[in-house]
Image (cartoon, rainbow, N blue to C red):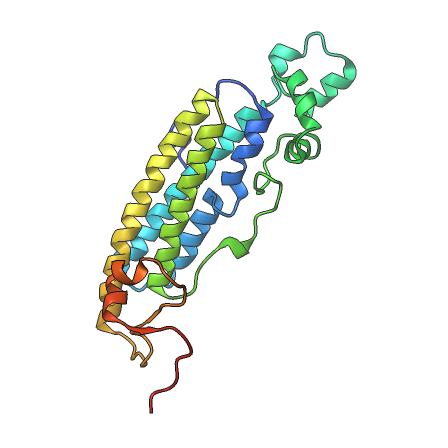
Length: 258
């Protein structure tokens, strides 16, 4: 079962609304390398994971990813600037009052948003159609899909996908840190960069544990495992990688040995 605590894992305090920034951060709300993808992927993988320790690890990280998703959603909402009825109702016309009541007026950023609406289709949709409600879409407005989830039933393959997911998410947050200048959002990005790095380290350790388990029950391999494909002329791979140094080298078609 899940229990929700009424506080964020890490405080999110955006300094001022900026719809362009909000659209960028959507990448980690509903994108292919975002928090929803991570929590669902690890959650789904946990059911078929035979090792209790790795299964527990997947559930722990999956649950933390839900907390990250909550933080990202809070950040986007603050960047969009929700309706502020107490400060803005005075002086508004009837049409504007109706918009504010429906959540379609951005406090302290109305003029800026009016220009941004015409420049970014993702901001358009969030402002006009959704009334500030968050959709599971990426920064270009592409909807989330279950095709983002990697779960093949092979423990090592799954964990390697998880490691790659953490490294990709870390890279996205690093890019967001570079391009989103809001200091409050950047504090959140730095926290999430650190947490993705921690998850990556945990998955690296889990991969080694899983490989040890797999070696004990290794499937029979054929005759073509210990081959190196020297199929591009020049380069350093054959002299730098241990596998290549100990392998048979092929530079063309491989024929069956009789």
